[in-house]
Length: 100
Length: 172
Image (cartoon, rainbow over all chains, first blue to last red; front, side, top):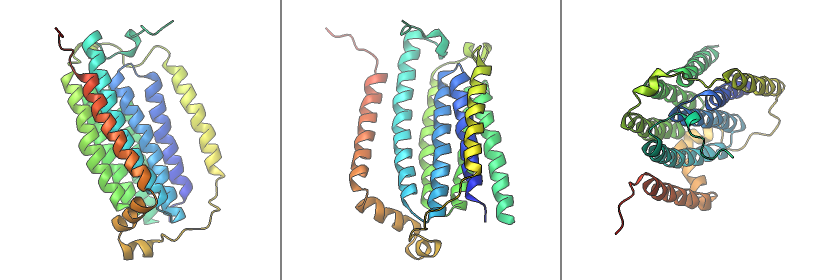
């Protein structure tokens, strides 16, 4: 039997790799993929908790997270397309209109 | 022992694939590594007796979301984007922040013990009721209202995506 802590550590590592990618990449598409990576890290820990607590509610939460991730991906990619149409670049450091 | 070996394989591959996803220069390659990563995560869910979640991981994540990503990557022609550096100038700061938070979280997890009593959905119960049926029973009774809200979220996402990506037409 694999201990629950191993799953939680794996989940933390995947989440933090996602954080690293989101903070450091220039390409906005890969930043969005890092967000998906973070959501997957959380899903791993939720399913592990659900298994070890013998409770299905964690998996319900995973179900909703996947729904929201799909919505987020659709809207985010639409924003990227609109951005690319106006600026013809996918690099975030060339977008500084909102800077005060 | 065999279970730990399986988990070790999946954990190692998942970590390596996530690193590949965030460090590759070409977004198409990142998407492909992510596809493999999602299949491994789905196998991990199977390992945790969550068949339905594994199925929707493959269908929704690998089948729908990643295809959407691939579609956008191929739609935007990123030829000249590939020539510049992939990380921002201050990437060591980002590495430091994420490594520091990871160290804190790992330290917390190491001393974590599960103290709550186990619920009624044991493996035998799920095996008898089948996983999808057990999940659906909770989803359509206890979580009916959140389920309806989720459908509303998806509707808003569809409308929002169309409005955002639509080309402005000349109004007369």
